[in-house]
Length: 309
Image (cartoon, rainbow, N blue to C red):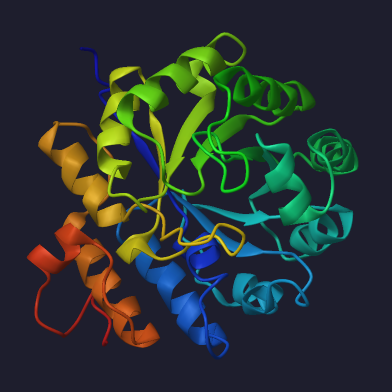
């Protein structure tokens, strides 16, 4: 078994975590406070907003205001999801450090999610890729439903490899492989990664696993054994998928960090303030903390990162 000595955590909670939060709109100052707290925990890559139509994702309607209000820390990459040229232009004006595009490994999911085929979705990204290259903005690519689809069931690993290779060939510097509905198991995860590795090297891949069936940590350990060195996670396990019935949130960043620390893998992230941040945002949203480690190690209410709760 060969594990990486270092793992980069990509924090998803301000975007993937909050975008589908039910109920009233989350205040902009809560979003910016969350991002600021996460940066102070040592997270160096934070997906902070999504520049999409507020008609479809109302919780992200204030993306420009969020990006303008955060207290940017040196060495932190503040990224945003930009599915089309209008989104890219707005993100560029807001001063994002990185943009992201997304495609599905499932034709049915692609049609339900963004109303077009996989091939059409990839074609739509081409202008974004060209504009990003022109402005020296790195692009991250997401592939969803890599370990299962709510409409098609199992997805062939070769299909995941195809979509990942298309995104890599278009110019995405990193491809994040998403188990959108959380149905994956460790052996499935290894087989999927093995197929993708025939097209895209491991050092350009990230794991983005949801915890619907409680398998995310086991799946992450499985792909860590295969050399994955980048993991997407969301503090307090925030997030879900509006097009995947019953899909719970992303794996909690606190739980991933607890695993990595137990394996002696360096991340540069401080667990104690991260747990306090998970408690804080859970209180703000009036919802239970979805992190097992966060619940077990939570400190009493009070200051986190030197800031009043």
